[in-house]
Length: 459
Image 1 (tube, rainbow, N blue to C red):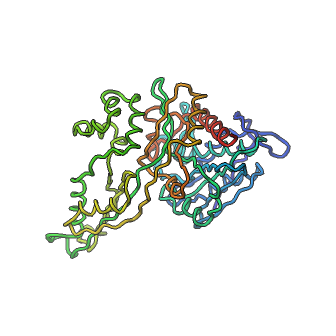
Image 2: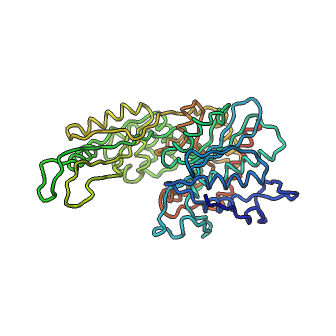
Image 3: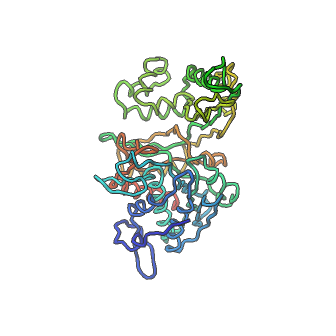
């Protein structure tokens, strides 16, 4: 592991208002400088190297005099957590993942692992997903650690590995190997929801559930041979036929209650005709034309109305003139959280029946939905309304997955939320090119986040 924390981070004249003691001097941590430094810590997954992030946070905790624990699930796959003891109310965990997805500098305007300020934005991989929220969590945790006000509940800061690849080297490992880290925790704040700024309208989405990833392999075997004389069937054509049948039979539309509620909250932020349609989405989806237009204009919202499968990986021969004995496709399926994965896999098997392809589960999570009526959500809404009086709220359903599914399986009320406000199009860099966060609005979001955590833990 090669990592050194920039000492300039700890000696700058900083502008945030979260004090800490270093020796006899009182300093302040600046969230933008912290985020800038953190984004330059290489935690691209694969391979991960999240122990670099552990070293980043450990150096800060050491300077702050805050005790913490850490552990590696495999060489370089580090996780770190710290607890502030409080009263008897169910505890709060601030959960983040430190790994980021790969980036190709050829398609970026700035180096992906170099934080760059430009036109009021901070560019770099992880700015949004999710090192930005991670630093907001750190700032909130430090504020509580330095506060003289007794806490009404324990607060745990946890930064884990591997979320981008399923979380098995991260949150899943900590749950299995260090269950004491979750003892007494009743609530989790994680990634998954944020604010949307459209004109004068601010709508804050709080993620309460997510589509369930069901990753599948479609494999086939057949007689190999020379490419110069095609046989009637082959392993490759069997897989192609299966994929064609799957694409030709899309999963039916079904509106689950959580999506219906989410769409109603979003309606006022959308242009016609989607605004009216979202108020009564069950009626709107009876029109094939509307469904097609929604898919074209808002593919993310369309994906919340049905189970989906994306064809992402294909493997066959290693040589152009050899018909291989085996071939395989891997598909990224996401199902709505109103049934189990086994029922969904049966649906996929029926759609590829007759092709001679075997359907194998690579990974599948269990569905879970957090309650909307909880003290944490009451606090989030009350604190946001103090700072944004015109705000509206939506209980969001995410098309992607987060580590919250692990904590929901433990029975913990888990929510995805950051008060960061985004303009339309500003989040397109997530898993894409030129990921960036608006610096001014990020500072505001960190302040909002700290206020929310303070209010919930000092009730």
